[in-house]
Each structure stands twice: as structure tokens, then as C-alpha cells.
Length: 352
Ligand code: NAD
Image (cartoon, rainbow, N blue to C red; front, side, top):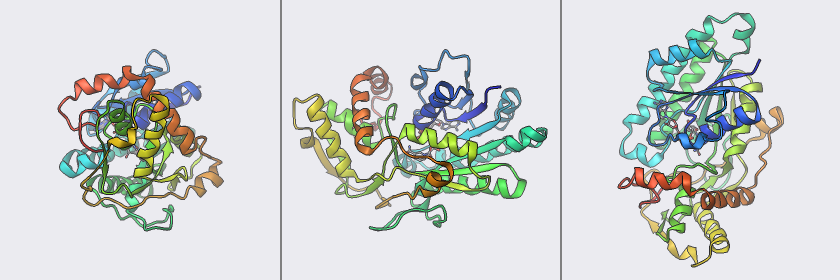
């Protein structure tokens, strides 16, 4: 019998990569539970839309009865919880949705999972897993040296990272208090195809393609540890399948880059692939984000040694693939510029 996975947030950037991976590479049956906020896009799931192993439920994870019904009717072997409000800048101007979805929604999902899991029989109950997907931003900011380990104390800076930290604590508490088989993953910044164009990399690619300014916060010296989204999807599957219950796994590609170097690299690739101008001339430094963490960098040793995971893409190969994907797939991003005209999206204006 095929593995049955309930994925929340499967219409988002990482969730859609995970759904494509689970259905097409792993042969799993997937129920994608997604509210379809501005960040949810069913076009990212075109590859699986007609596959009988894939189902979609439009629902809010804060809706307790809808979540209970989803568990009872789909009867998953595993939950992979990605639904979240995920954009730091939006959390600074309006934190309410972040508290509702990331904290209250995670609570409702944990309760629905606990209710369903507690009624399962021996083997199914033993095998059930709840993977809570989170971010390295919960650890706060690093100085020039050091890495985030699984034991690094939480020290979130933004409303987004604070809401994710709260949800991580809830997930762990549901394991310790009720025995729900929870595993937590904390990952560094992802990039790749189907990334909503308010985030740094797709924003830069699309603004550059349109000859628009490329906004970079401060002096562009903030460092992020970039991971190709398909490498993250494989890591999540591995952690859910073989991670130890009650434990945390850090996920990262050992690809630290300054923001300005990421933007410059994209410009160089575009100079080569589309030409027409020196794209780096479009870079504009803008006022820094309040509470902007200086550096994130992940130690993924545990995931590599315990579970045998290794990133397949380097930053160089992944960023080249990503730029090419945006050039070749205007069908995916062009409708967004019409749908969200007037909002502060990269392809319209404003920084990520
Ligand atoms: P995203 O914003 O692209 O997608 C989020 C998805 O969740 C969307 O499809 C949206 O419609 C859905 N959603 C939002 N609120 C919902 C609700 N109340 N009920 C049901 N669905 C809802 O996010 P992403 O970048 O794909 O991130 C996915 C997860 O991974 C998040 O939990 C995020 O914190 C975590 N994460 C992201 C990154 C990154 O670099 N993007 C890195 C580490 C961890």
C-alpha cells in the first residue's frame, strides 16, 4: 500500500516541491491541505494535478472541524506541516496573520492529529509521524563565526521567527506531554523554481528581466545559507521517514552567501543568458529592515551522518537552474503580476 501523506501548505513554494517529490518520485498518496492565501498557487502543482495519487482540500489549518474531518476521511500515515505565513517583511507590518496561522493553526493541527493518532491501532499508531517544518530564523542571528546547531537556544528577532519558534515549542510539547510522534526540522533559506516573487532571489531575477531597480537592504552584507528547494524536499521526506521522534534536525546546504553576492551572481548569469545590459547597474541599496539578522548558517551534520542526506545542488548549479527556470516559465509568474498589481511585489516594486 502506498504511503499516505497529509501535507499542509502544499500550494506554497516548498510545499509544492515536496508534493511533486512525494507523488512523482516516491509514489506516495498526498492530500494537500491549503487555504490558498496570496502565497498559495495551484499552478505550481500542474505536474500532479491529474495524478490519481494527488488530492487537494482548500481549508484553513485554524479550522478545527475541517482539520478533524481531513484526518478522518484521508487517514494519513504521516503529516508534513508546512502551512505558514512566511514573509518576514509582512510580519513586521501585520503580525496578526502570523500569530493566527503559525501559532493557533499549528495548535489546531496538532490537536486534530492527536485525536486521530490516539484512535489508531498498534502498528499504525507506532508508525505515524508528524513532521513540523520550521526555519533556522528561530535561532536568531550569528556573528562572523559559528553555526546553528540543534541545541542552539532559540532567540527569534522578527514576528515571523517568533511565531515559528512558538509553533516549534508547541509541536515539541505535544510530543512530550501527549506522546504524539513529532519530529521537527529547521532549515535555512530556500530558493528555486516556483518561488513567490516577493523573496530576494525571484524578485531580483524578475526585476532584472524587466529592467527595474534591484533593491538590496542596507549594504547587502547580511549572510544567508542557501539551499535548493528540491534538496529540502528530499531532506523532509528522509526526516519524516527515519528521524527520531522528539528530535530536531537542522537542514542546510553549507552555502553561505552575502545578499549582495547573490544579487550580483544573478546579474552575471542574466548578462550571459539574455544580455542587453549590465544588469548589476540596476542594483539600488535601500533602508535596512528593522531587526535584520546579520548571518544565518546551519550545521547539518546530524542530518548528514544519521540519515545520510547530502545536498545535490551547489549554490552555483542551483542558482543557474533557477534563473533559467524563471526565463523559461513566464506562464507561471506573469499572471501573478496582474493578480497582485498594486501590492508590494518584486515584479511591481519594492524590496523583498
Ligand atoms: P509559502 O509562503 O510559499 O507557502 C505557504 C503556504 O501555506 C501557502 O500555500 C499558503 O496558501 C498556505 N497557508 C498559509 N496560511 C494557511 C492556513 N491558515 N491554512 C492553510 N494553508 C495556509 O511558504 P514556504 O516558503 O513554502 O515555506 C513553507 C514552510 O517552510 C513554512 O512553515 C516556513 O516557515 C518553512 N521554511 C521556509 C523557508 C524558506 O526559505 N522559504 C526556510 C525554512 C523553513
